[in-house]
Length: 56
Image (cartoon, rainbow, N blue to C red; front, side, top):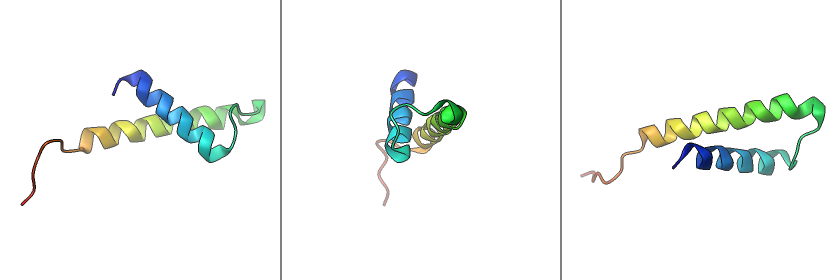
């Protein structure tokens, strides 16, 4: 995934969970931080995944 794809997925997730397409001005900072947090969590997940390995 590219950085743009990760950010777009994070934004989509935060919109879905919050129920807001665009946050109010007083919620904008919390919304932006949540997008940053979700993007970071996505990076962590992708870094930890083992692709193509078989477990026995």
